Image (cartoon, one colour):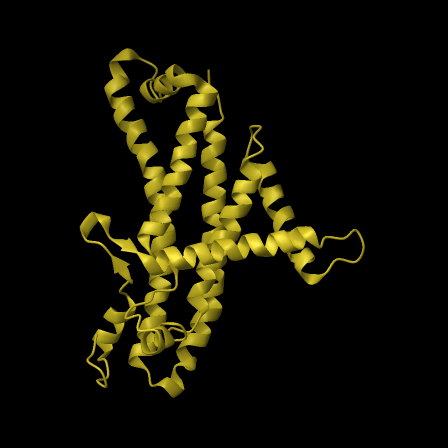
Length: 261
């Protein structure tokens, strides 16, 4: 970070904007900004849907009600087409994941210095990253939550013995192949939350870096030449990543509900 009155170099500017506001050290480091904006977008999602539910009418719906109905119908159809079990939790979970991640991703469209600049100069907050989904801790925490549900429903539906047999006797149903099956299935099982969290983080972090590079390397009056086209393209990335995380969650939980015995 530059001294007071001293302008940041491009490399210093990039480093500054990629640094989280954090407390603690090492493994116990807590990214306060990521937690704050993830909680903020989550509460925004709850508030908007609660308001839409309270003001819902059977007559001519308002814009908010139309938007919420479109989201609910879209997620509901995705669940019906993909999830083959019976569980009342899956549709609300999928809706929450899709809308929450979408709102977190949308924070990437906020101009780079729109919030960090006043936070630093007016509030004395030295660092502020406003895109929670560009923080690997947030995306992996969500992926591990999905992973915990996968394990819970796998054991609940198949039983502990059935789940163990699924790991030990697939794909080769022979006692001699148990070590190979366990290696293959455990690696495949652990790869699911890792790929789920890292995919979202990688795409959003890359998008954030591009916006920061544009702001660092181009004069302020010409930044829109790079940021506006990238923002338009990034809207597609934001939507796709929200959809992919939701669909993979549905697929993984559907697999957990399948009893192959």
